[in-house]
Amino acid sequence: MGNSTSKSGFAAKVTSLPARSKTSIYALLLSQLSSFHPKTIIDFRQKKELMTIVKKAILDHEQSLSVVGFHLKQAATTRGISSHFKALVKDASDALANSNFKKSFEVQTVTPQDLPARIPRQVESQIAVHLLESPTLLMWKSVNKISAAIVDLLAKHVDKPDLFTEFLLHINGKPGNELEPTIPLAFAHFYTETTLTDVVQILKEGNDLAAVMLIQFMFMRDAFALLDVDAGFFQNILSNKFGGEFKLHLQDSDLDDSQNHNLITMFFLQYTLFSPQLYTDRGRAEFNSHLDNHLGISTHANDRIAMGKQLTSWYPDCMCQTADLQSPFLTNVVQHDIPYVSGASGMTSLFLGAMTLLGNFPTPQEKQYYLLAVVAFMVSGGLHSMHEVLSVPKVRLGLLPEYQTEGNKMGNYDTAFFSLFANDPEVASRLNSAWTQTIEWINCTYPKAFPNDVALEKTTEENPQISPLNK
Image (tube, rainbow, N blue to C red):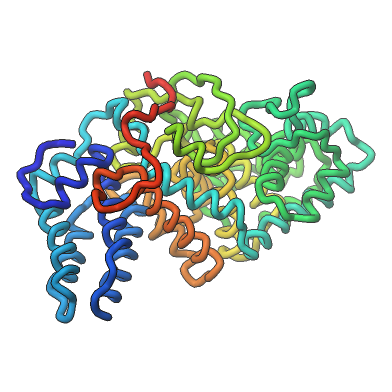
């Protein structure tokens, strides 16, 4: 951690957390607030409000410490707070106002030491896994609509099983070693032979989100473009309004010719061709094979073990994809405390194809809940960060209009995405559980910052970082 002339005890404690990441500041403050026992009703209210503000700062990757600092100052001068709570918030407020303290968290040049992003990875992983393992009813409603469309298409092509050969190959395990995938990204693939009849049953039952999302992705990847779909199918889709690059694509394409309807499908499947500015620089260097079955985008050995796992294995990008330190994309995300996994998500483009061509959702809400399922699947599978997922619907379809893909406010997960579900108690429940687990993890992982707390396990420097080597 950079040197600071601040006399704040808060500033000293934050040196025990990862250096050069503003998320470390917010994480320490969140943990301190969480463990504080209110002395008055005013303490209780201020604690609750400040914890909401700090969580938002973490999810929005807030780069201005003055934002949280302002609220800390306000709380410290609130009439009726106890002297203990005032001391806590003033200590943090003084640190955040110190110029040398601020400078110590600025990243000009990205180094390999900046890549672990252990706290941001934990936050994203906890949220995604909680949503994947306990999907909400409205998430299932959107997902099931796409599943029903797939079931219908499978029934219409029941006499052409050869069209689904690649699809079945890739949702199943490797012949002779079924716990391994046939392709690296096959997160949640099946270890027992799964037939088209089984696929229909799994989609109709709709009780395993990871399995259903894998089927939907592979169906778009390997099967949809091969099917006989009449022009009326596409005309129904085109009756909706679209934004982003897809709107421009439709304007430039001669879709009066039924044969050109294939251009709609190709927009989603051949994403690098139609969105070069999004996919040219993804910060990628070498891909080193690392077979794994643990959930989330964390790279530290202890964090992966604690997060939970699948029965079958795959090659999660967070463990396999090395980063090009010269990449402008990489520099941009690291400077905003956003974890790098593998750059803008091509898989998400295929999910957007499923959402547009199969879901054909009439309301923004249905699309938002489907994107929530996509985020849960992609981040739980260690395939992409939330930013690498959310940037794609923003650019390609013009969804999530408030989401920032660049600039000082980039990666504003809470403002542009999670706030859309603010009135959904089921989503709130999953997020609250994820935050509880995250705070417990912070306390146990960085015991030096909490000398009066009991650490359940020691996960400090002596535990190996098993993130990939970086170029």
